[in-house]
Amino acid sequence: MVDFARVQKELQECNRDFQVSGIKVIPKGDTNLAHLLGTIPGPLGTPYEGGTFKIDITLPDGYPFEPPKMQFATKVWHPNVSSQSGAICLDILKDQWSPALTLKTALLSVQALLSAPEPDDPQDAVVAKQYLRDYQTFVGTARYWTEAFAKTSSLGVEEKVQKLVEMGFPEALVRSTLENVGGDENLALEKLCSC
Picture (spheres, rainbow, N blue to C red):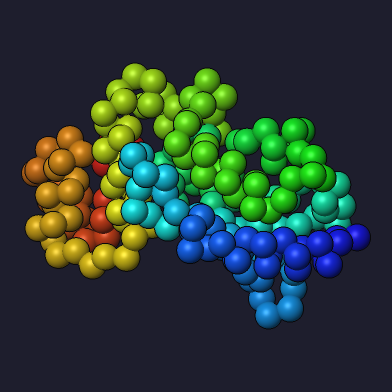
């Protein structure tokens, strides 16, 4: 059974120094403390800088003796995060979990993972391959995904074209792809990446 008194204490600890850490955890529903939503800021000096990333947290019945189940709710381009499901490959969320760890330390570890990818132990092989073989394209794509999914913005068509062209795609292809997907830059990026 989940130790809800501990969870309540952890939520208070997380939210107490939100102004310093930028990390916040709130219940996903009004009363269910087994399903939470965490928020972490993108680390400075990375392609994720300036983004706010939401993480879906489910506490198993065995918490804190079993690790929390975490996955990105915000799409992120990273070798250790599934670009499809948001699943996270991180040892402390699996076999290296300890009851001494907290939700905040787990979220800090996820934030640290954004700063220091481990492409040799990937969750997303396509992203890891790009990271290892074409680092500049990886950085551009990660930055673009941060802009598109982790920040609030409303871009016009020309701005969308410019962002995608800056990622290295030919302008004519970008324009036709955007037209084919009704101007949805996220769908356009997916189609361009799968070419």
